Length: 165
Length: 186
Image (cartoon, rainbow over all chains, first blue to last red; front, side, top):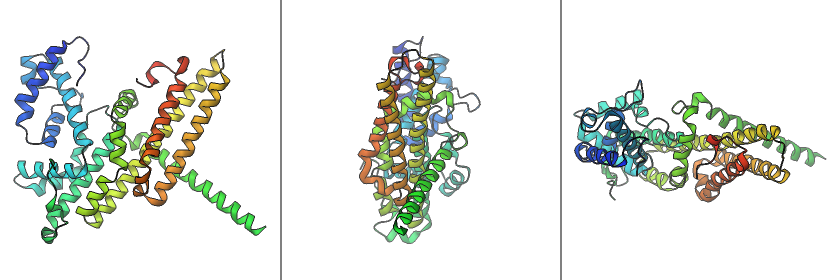
């Protein structure tokens, strides 16, 4: 449950949040994809969130409030999920959206682009856990790809459980 | 006589080791080591931590993630996992220590200006503060010697450290001892 900012009508904010979930976030495949999307709606120079559609239908301040709240919520969900779930989300994210998954893994490993995914002013311990878990999940996914013989091994990462399990 | 000297040497060695651990984890809490959240954001970050404290500590120190890595990842990733969790645990310990230190410093500064000193409250705060420091040092020693896996059976005690810090902050904030923004959110 989110707390609306001062001066904004709670019902308007709830409507905008529903709109964001139904029209935009529902179309994205997986929690990690939603987190990446929400982080990308933030201007990295100012830290402010912006969304043309939401601003048009509601207002800039409502859009900003709703995006910030949705970002915090999505981040907490991914950061606190068990590592096996994060690995599954990451595998799914990489395989579903990229023609060359190894490029994405390479880029994420070298530039550590996932460091910009947490919302500003979140708990630093949660942020550290998230960054650390993504780093480990990348290593697990990469190891599973680099070792084809692991596919024969019943204990290999290719047998990773689905998030729902 | 030589037995006493050996015991003294061991005692000094342990004190030195604890000092080293405290310095290491104080370094981990330096601004350079935590560039993601500014000091101005600290109260809301603390609130975010409080809201998900149990879940977070369970995720960091619980057995689930380690068992998954043990069963699904090569040795190289297992080593990476243990190293990462160790760093996170040291960081968490340094957070606890820093918050306790800040609270006690603010309280002392306020108490110096106060006309009404309450000796019982001061004593309780001092005891709480030193207990937190000692427990942090013990957890750090276990972490340093046995790694994060050694803390798996101590989740309750480790989580208790957080509760003790909260208790201390509440005690310190009693009677307007602390400025509003550093009070523990209820």
